[in-house]
Image: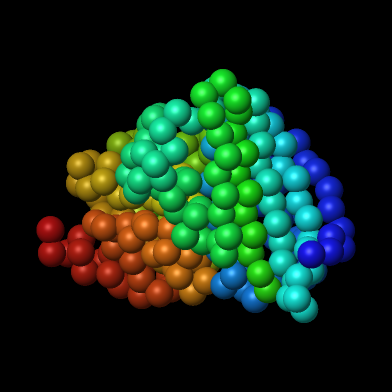
Length: 134
Length: 120
């Protein structure tokens, strides 16, 4: 896997969620991603960035344009130093929420991307990595 | 304060969302619309989202609750103009907006509103 380009963007306040999805849209479109795939990716970014702000108390979004066996993709990492998630199985259940949301954020985002990885523990913060190939 | 404009046309209210909404803006729209339905005794609300290139679970929930709130206040809501890529994504996300009336464009949406209001 080679990294073509990478960067990081703060996701601290609600307005940063809008900026995060705008940045993801720009990079994905520069990669030549199809509109439907791009829309799915941007929607996943919106869900995860909101989680970072609301549940993680703010964090960062790292992005990288990657190349692997001839294909190009966008990999994004949402990381925070928040309380973390105790029961990841429960957190990845449709309709379950610890807050007042619909409980579609994590599970929905997982369905919208090609690769999804959740790395978290109580008191250790949360790290969600997603990849969508073009 | 940033706001999404709500236009009145006879007994209907029209909203065209043309900005990339942050969550507070979406919530403000919900409050503003409820207030305007009350003030104007509107019978219908048409929400045009043709300029939105993304609808996530938060915006989806806002749309569903506007629809539910307006029904309780004796007004019908029709959502129009959803882009195909947005529709595909919403379904995959798990949000099918049950109970929300939809139409392909503003024209058909207005027809649907007139029908619905005429019937009730």
